[in-house]
Length: 187
Image (cartoon, rainbow, N blue to C red; front, side, top):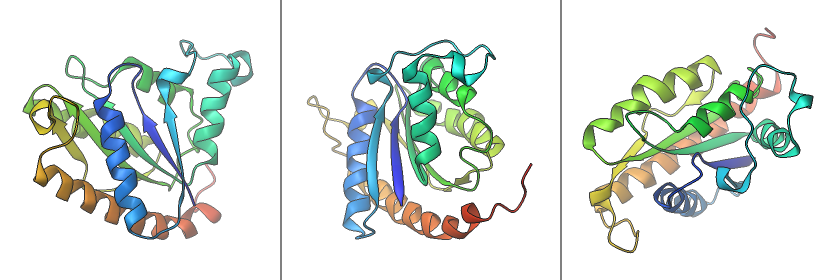
């Protein structure tokens, strides 16, 4: 099983730190997944405007391939101005609708206020529902108070929730194996 860890921003480090932590906890389960990091900062993004996928640059085509080849995703997003970053939404707009169908997804988010956790409920989940993903019910939202001055996660509760997210993600991945091999609906 190939898991793609998506760092859905081109700036900052906290989403990457959270993804590193989730990856370690998934490894601790002994699942043996093939895990890969996709950092949007490493790509030359183009504005998605409805043209055919072949008309975009090689980086955009590679983004699509990475998503298509994955069997599951852990998506990290910061919250900017009460929303997900434009680069993350742009990537979702680029993906064919079946790309993530019936594949497990866990969400981690980071923001400057505690109220921004609602971005996961009001924006991320509806987008992933459109793709018909198997979204784990236990996303983790972090806040600047959960990190020390070096960027290390210092909140024990956050660590506990990330461990649980990893455990549930592994279970959802096992459940999704059969669903993605013979799609229930071909539309």
